[in-house]
Image (tube, rainbow, N blue to C red):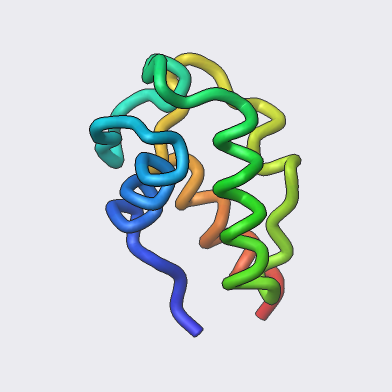
Length: 84
């Protein structure tokens, strides 16, 4: 099963948080509509759809004000490769 694209992931997080938009290269924490609960809600949805990836809350353990969905996507790809 393939992972969603980085653009799809950004759109999913925007939808969960109610953010007007979130681009793949926009810093997540700089978007005032996205908070840690939104990240956990998004992660829960991702885990349910892609349980084989093994993503957990550590995905966001080193998030800072420069972290983008492209960074998160890269971590997910690495996790999926490890799980394969």
